[in-house]
Length: 298
Image (cartoon, rainbow, N blue to C red; front, top):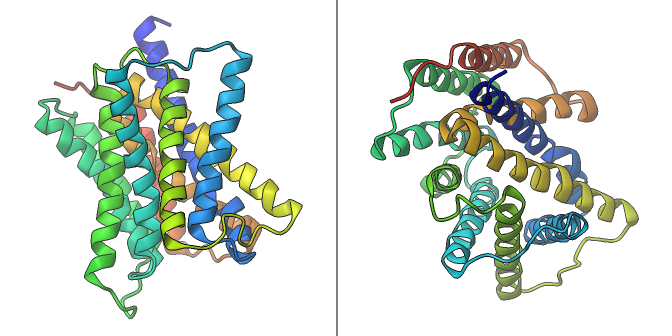
């Protein structure tokens, strides 16, 4: 296996891991929400515990924390983009159905591809076909309700979530300023920025930082939320984006809703309709096609 093939294989595996790990959000978040933990508190501990876990790992491996001043500003921007993606998505649920929000957020592969075209980096037709097919699969999966009330602000928030995520992926891949920054260091500073943002918003909003956290199970779920769909997902996302590019990485993000749906069906008894099963098959087929027929980019 030559160096290019090896990097491509690692990139695809990391992208799939990022999607699957991020898709475990409901496994940890749903019990916390049912326990009465506010969203901002949950997001703060999700990012804060991730910072402590990753910093501990870096200390154990004797990895440097220091970054240049020119790099620090961009790392902070990356943290804000990723944190805003989460914040905008949760906020959109108050104005539009979650199915519609999921569909709109999955516009981010399209946004990534368009941003890359603007930067004169043109995805192959195979990648474009995979983007269209996976978006069609997401439409089948999300099943937006036609009877629910839809407010323009919710649509704007969901699209803003997708845009924030798209810019995060592109900057990680294309920025020369942070090219020498390791994935661990990049992720650490992004998470730290997010934790600080959520703490600041919660402080302005009012209310305790421990509201709703009453049991050992709550802390275990917060730790799981910080470890799997946050720290592991972000690390894998950075590796994948650098090895195979942000466009292909964004298509592999389809494993996020697929994993979430399977968790909901198996663990929470949520229904899996034939229409949703067809959506899963379409998404998986599109990803397999992209991996087997990556095509040439220009």
